[in-house]
Structure formats: C-alpha cells, structure tokens
Image (cartoon, rainbow, N blue to C red; front, side):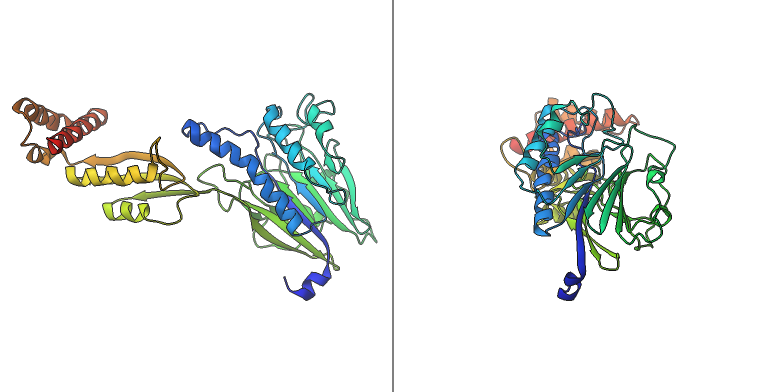
Length: 378
C-alpha cells in the first residue's frame, strides 16, 4: 500500500475464521496428530501478531473457532490466556459461534461457562441473534451467530438494509455455507464488507466481484489435503469512500501437499528438496522395481519419513505404498549365496508373488525382499 493510500485509510480490520481448536487428526500417527492439533493453538500468536503489526481497529472471528460446542479446558483456557496477554482496550475482538461450535445452552458460549469470565472486557461474544456494535463514529458491525449445525435461513437476512442517508461503513459478520448465504447479500443489505467463515480457503464470493467484498479468509492452519488456499487471514483497509481493499496475510506454519512419484529419480528429487521441513506430505509411490532398486527406494522413503531416533526430511509423511512393487521374477538371481532351503523358499515365494490375490502377492514380495537383504548380508 502506498503512503497516499495509507493516508486515505479510515478503518483497518483483521478477519479470521475456522480455527477449529481441539481438532483431532485420526489419520496420522499419534505424535504427528498431536503436533497438528497444537499448531491450531500456536497459530493464534501469529494471528494476534498480525493484528498488532497492521494496527487494526478490530478483529473479526467468523465462527468455527472451536471444533465442537464443548471443547476441552486446555483449548478454551489457552485461547483466553493468549487474549489476556494483550492490552487491547481500543481494539475489540468479536467471537462468532459457527456451525461446529454453535450457540447452544451449556456450550462454550453460554454466559455461565468459565470461558466467558476468563475473557478480557474488550472481547465480545456474539450471543444474540443480531449484534450491532459501533467500530467508530463512522463504522458499524452487524453480527449473526449460528445456533445449530445447519439451517434453511440466510443469516444475513437479519441484518437491516442500509437506511437512506446512512453513510457509515457497514460490515456484516456471519458463518456459512451450511446456511444458504446469498452471493449478493452484501449488495442487498447495503454492506461495505461481508466477513464469512466456514470454507477453508481464501476466496471472494463471487470470485469476480471485489466490491463490496464478500470474503472467506479460510482456516489459518490447513486441516486437509484438498483445501485450496488455506493458511491466511484477511487484512481489510477502508478508505474515506467506504471502498475496501483486502489482502491475504499468510500465517500458517504447515503446508499440506499431495504428490506421487513414478520413478526412483522422482523419489530422489523429492527427498532432496529444501522446502520439506514444514510440509505435511501425502506421498503415493507407484513403481515396479528390481530388488536393488527396491532397496534404494526404501532408503529414500526412510530419509523422508525418519525414525523414532531421527527426524525425517519431511515434516510429516503420510505414505501410500500400495503401488510400490518388487519385480519378483529376478530375485532368485540375487540370492545365490543363500542356503538351498532358503533358495527353495525364494522360488515358492516367487510363485506366490505372481498370484492374482493382491494381499498374498504383497506379503510374498516383502518376504522376498527380506531374503534378498539376507543374501546381501551373508
């Protein structure tokens, strides 16, 4: 932003959503799952740091801040402590219930929950069907919480339309897409910005309209391999003419990547990449190899994955090796040093490896590989 444009700014916001504190990652090894869950808490420091760095006037948190309506104490207490560490008397924070953590009796948002009493006074929970809150003399926020996991009504319909002569910056804060939010809601309600949560990638809605902006900032830490453009918050600048300029601000620690390799050269190139330390890598290996080549592939995979005693090259690895096959027909030629009884076992396993049953063939291939390694060691 140029100095001239900065001088025109009359209001600055940080818009975030979909923290999913308390989310579990059952598909990962226990240690990796814990690391990914913790990352959802530590990213909050970068979000709050971005708010301070940009000197925003308010922080809008558009729902699904917790992964369920009654999260464990470690999650709500950790959030409250991070907020307590700030001295933001002039920077309000708005917490909106979403469809994962809806506004229900006895939920995290209930007035009697200890989370509420642990929050600083400048943190506002949206616990009414329509909250109207002034952000400045010339700006107002309208926020509508979720009271269920899904619904048939558009939450933006609760926001009043712009009255004649109302020249304030008008901002909406809601949560979709389990609620049918109209793509033209910002125009229909006379909003200058509509902050939404729910989908996990940064996007404009519709994608070809930037004024007035309707924005999903996405989840600040990715949660799945199929998410497009996760890992951001939205920084929003308003000028005197009520026009909003929006920029994504990267805050994620982890980058999730889906890839496949079909040759040793591709696997080696992947192992040698310098950007893997913060990657959650889902790797599909699809190749049929001779025994010596299979051994090379195992070493490369081990370099990527690591062991209990050492870190792998990839931050985390989810390995699909069903497509990694041993060329069983030539294993016997590498096993001439084995005793005759083991050579007979090699021949029987080669026959089993050629069988039509995939599981039996895979077991036979692994056994042949171990016999090959035993031959190499003898």
